[in-house]
Image 1 (cartoon, helix red, strand yellow):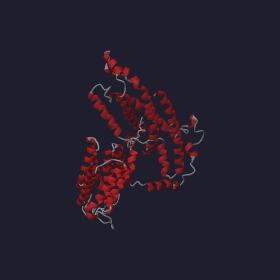
Image 2 (cartoon, one colour):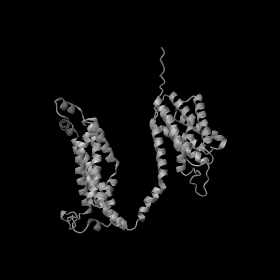
Image 3 (cartoon, one colour):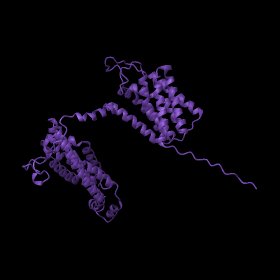
Image 4 (cartoon, helix red, strand yellow):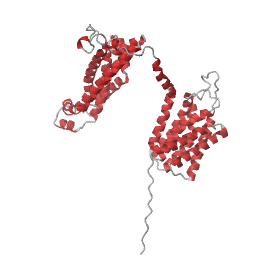
Length: 456
């Protein structure tokens, strides 16, 4: 009698995760960027060969199987694109314009085409492959502007003394970074069916690009944060001045001896209360008209939705500037500005809440023969009322913070006091007021959170 030996068990290969593609992606991008330093050598062919080697190594590291023919196709496509890229960029560019960027982008069509074809063979969807192709072109479109932003490309237009108007090795390296972050990230994400890698690589590059555009740097941030200790008259905070004479917390001292001269923090609170009440009240009917479920007809929906978008387009600070100009500086202008601000927030949030309610009660009310608005009031309003109250409390918190900023343009409240003291370099008073506002807003926020938990 023979007994069969134990069967050999093989552990299944674990599925790829996005984080497992980070190292391969870095290898591929680094190789293409490093190859950019050889851009002028051998007409760009060496650049493409190095980039292709990095991409193939990345596929191997990620354990994505590719055939020798696919490797050759990928290498040929990348080398063709890098050769074309060195041909379309002039040695002495007059300026950076759309035609120059389009020419550079068209040079990367071979690389986009072969990577798209390989991704389709690896099981990518048709829409994903199209997106990958477009992303290669998008990365190439922003490559030259990014090089100019990173201060490595200097066209003839706007040259400073001592700068040379040529494309050098560093220029190609920076342009390669843009193409790699868009195109190679898309290719690896498609072949591994992990699109998150594509999104994160593009977002990372655009963040770096935007930071360079506005001059944001980590060393600059550290230096500016450390400079806060150099602000004159900052410490210690002057709480005696900020609180005022007498028992500040007692109602009788809130007016500082005059019915028209309220404590600035109390004035800020009053502005927020009025603006929240009026703005939220006005937003209730507007929100119902801005929902497809409760609007009586298409025309009223479009008009009301357009009004909400118009009000939301104008920021609260600009509303304050408008009303300060029209009605004069003071708390009244700030109140009017925050009414529009509250209306915009509440109408937007509440209309989306109305869209998500259960339509059953509304249909039942209409089936009984009820008119449109009575049916809405009876069937929809009770469903959204808890959210309405919660949103109103949230809007009140925002209005407290916003009223502080509005005072800077003369719209009353504690912000007006802060701006006056800043103008006189009394930063000890500014710090004291900021600390008081922080404590005040923190208390309001905790109370609001507790109430919202009970309501929703």
